[in-house]
Length: 297
Image (tube, rainbow, N blue to C red; front, side, top):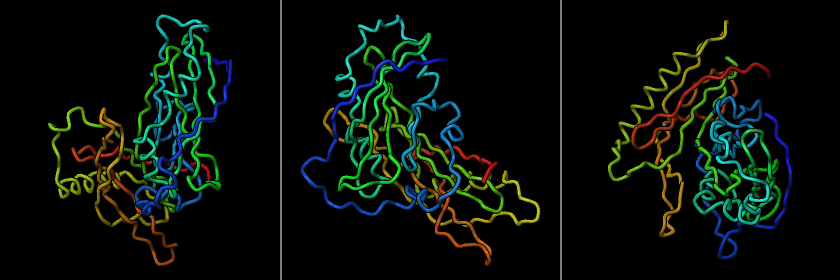
């Protein structure tokens, strides 16, 4: 399906921290920043979320921001003429990340970052219509460089509707001797009715996480001439994920537990502080667990 970039706009819009220079934050929880511990082959969005649109989906640390193709490619009905497309200024204003999304991003970054608008492109897709793509770049609050650019792409229809992406907390763990990734993917979503939501105890959460991980281990194919990978339970702890801002300006969060496991390494294997996390929501939903082989090193 072809597309043509018709127009690109650049406006100086920064979502800077309010109230001057913020206080230094606490250290990022290891469950949210372990991706920094290993430099090697990375998993693509497509390998973790198969139905994600690769042109608009992004990952920031251990957060996956994914737009399902079926939603991105839903045609405008009725079609919108070019002259009737919502103006770029309104598009940028509507997509400016709120404090909940900024907090969600900053859970996994150190120091805190802020968003700056880096341009909007009007895209024409055959049989679908026009779409605005707005690029928001992340920069450290204290200045300097963060290395490769971190960005979030917002998508807006020709009529000005902001298309909400799906958000996932994910974890990956490399088992070197078997040349494969263990993957854990939990969709972040507020419950429809939090008051009626069934909440599990920490013990129940831990039991679900352990049971799910045991099933995953049974699926690991052992490389000939090597021993099976062995893991031990490390700990279980909770994190609040900010997801939205209510009418009173208060942040609404989803609570999830990380059930963590540590690989038992042989004496001659390089030691690591890395762990693998099975995510479990407080209502008992367990993250999707999968195995992805490494085809190239």
